[in-house]
Amino acid sequence: MTANAVDRTPEATVTVVCHSVHGHTRLLAEHLAEGARQVPGVQVHLVDIRAEHVTAGRWHDSEVMALLDRSDAIVLGCPTLMGSVSAVFKAFMEAAFTPFTTQAWKDKLAGGFTMSASQSGDKLAVLQQLSVFAAQLGMQWIGVGDMPGNNWSGGTRDDVNRLGSWLGLMSQSHADLGPEDAGSHGDRVTAQRYGERIARLTQRWVNGVPYETGRMTEHEARALSASLREAVA
Ligand SMILES: Cc1cc2nc3c(=O)[nH]c(=O)nc-3n(C[C@H](O)[C@H](O)[C@H](O)COP(=O)(O)O)c2cc1C
Image (cartoon, rainbow, N blue to C red; front, side, top):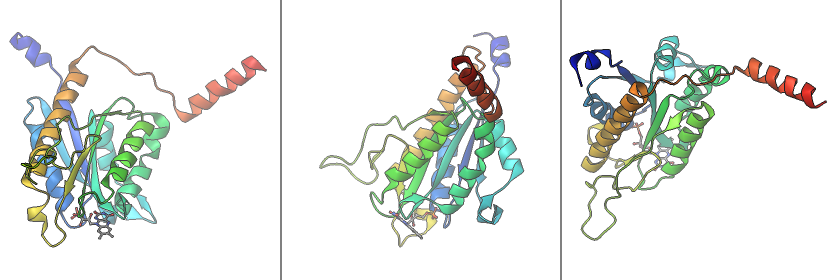
């Protein structure tokens, strides 16, 4: 590749959005972002979704939304609370109703991660919520591409993908330990590897064959449906 070709390569942007009450999920997000930063030409942002930005059940932060609008990939993360995404993160998800109606996030890449105290703790339910959310926004979901660890007699907590999760990244923190001990060494390595995978795929997505996705606002979709109804009437 010539130097000019390198110069012309547009920078890809990956933004990690994370809600964390006590800091365990936040540490995982930092490792994921660190992995993404290993990929040259990828700009990585780590943004906290904060409870103080929720008023009357509605999350609002126009700066964060503007950053997400111009990101090529959005990685979604929160703790598993009562077998669900955290309430604050759900408020953020509902604030994405505008990009839902305008399809502004269509064909961005997406991924997700969650943290909980129990080994299972119903974390899969959270990853399902996050991936359905991404699908509603028209985003392309990236899973964890690593083989499962800790599934044989010699396995340990420090294995890569030790909870054997592929839809997204799962981590588990002991309930009596602080956020500095969040997850296990294996979880943190898995987070870095997942971040790097997302960043590499985003590079490929951004710098591949130019492609402009078709978009219809909710209003345009209703107009199209109305014209189709008229056509068959
Ligand atoms: C209200 C509440 C509900 C929780 N629900 C679950 C749960 O469903 N499954 C689980 O394994 N852990 C559950 N936990 C534990 C948290 O997921 C765990 O402490 C996690 O590390 C918190 O992440 P954070 O430090 O980023 O806030 C719950 C904790 C709280 C306070």
